[in-house]
Length: 512
Image (cartoon, rainbow, N blue to C red):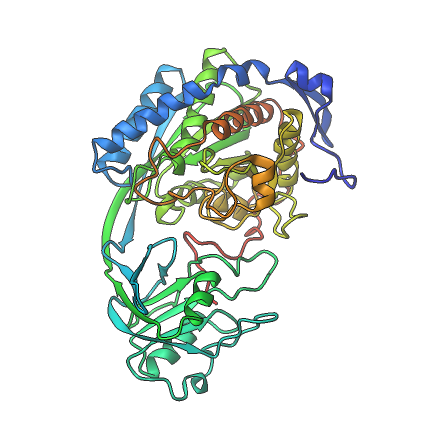
């Protein structure tokens, strides 16, 4: 659990009596305390209601090549489904069309061919192509290049031509992240005759950066002549310590033009100068139906919107329910949305709530660390207050929560870059559940929060209904709280900054 903060005004103070009554007190520096009763909405937003939408998304995927990827018939049918329900409920809906080029790596592979037995690694989980990598196949022994796997793991691996002295031409270079740009490492490897390059994460702790997990990186133009991929530190360490390692690395790269759309649904009433944007991405990856990622977030949002209308709630502030597209290809839909806002509209956006994967089968209740006090990366002013709404809600329900950082992997990114406060929920993706988390939340330690992340098995069976239950309640609670009062949350930097996150996996990628 997060410790109580004593250095600033708290946005939400939930007493035992208030929690039992379903009400919360929203207190801000710019207004008197306002009590918001969210109990009726939370009771109306049920797991059964959310599951109806997830069943519909599964049926859509079943009828459309087993996915709901942006630019495909599966995504189009998902938009049609959501739009029809919101139109019938009285929302003002808008489709926001945009186009982009998608790089498709279908057919790419990484296989350990020696020592026995052969091991096949998974694209997007074990390895990922770097921007401006070349295509083709490298089938060769793997050679370590000036690695540091001990102590602080400080690394200049591959940064100097001298690092490749004696490098066997034709081998695959295994390089550690650190110090110099990826382009320098890859180009030095190519000059030494490498047939392919694997750059694995550094393995140290850098506040505000992830130096352990799989990461996305760019070499910058021009396109290289050899395949270059990234990997997590754990995979790199494993490979570095495997005598006689040989790999077959194949990158198949195709580029296609995608035309798709965001779906926006506005409440008919509410102050437009304090718009609450509550969003999640509706598209799946091409590999599967995307029921947890992110049918779960969009299904819970949809049910919240429908039940708000059913209860006749006329919010003080306009709520814009946003169903983004192109997230899996680089957060493109949400970035396009923010790019089209005028400066006045940016200032009139009170905050963004983001819900991406809220039903993971091995779940943890993660809340974005808005003030950065736990993980070192804060959102714009007001983001910490959004965090408090969620953490206090879980406390009021006798449950726990943990902070997760603004790592740039979801649709809040464009909002915080524009200075708009943001927050949201997440139940985990490819990360591994710890023993402490298993003791607190149940589930299995040593297993991914979602073992089917970005895989064909992310289907209707890939869910924890218990996680979906409490997360749906939290989504309904926070959406209504901010629909009724937001002046304490409005950031002071809307339209004036680039936020605090410098790296993300999707969209803009790390350079070094």
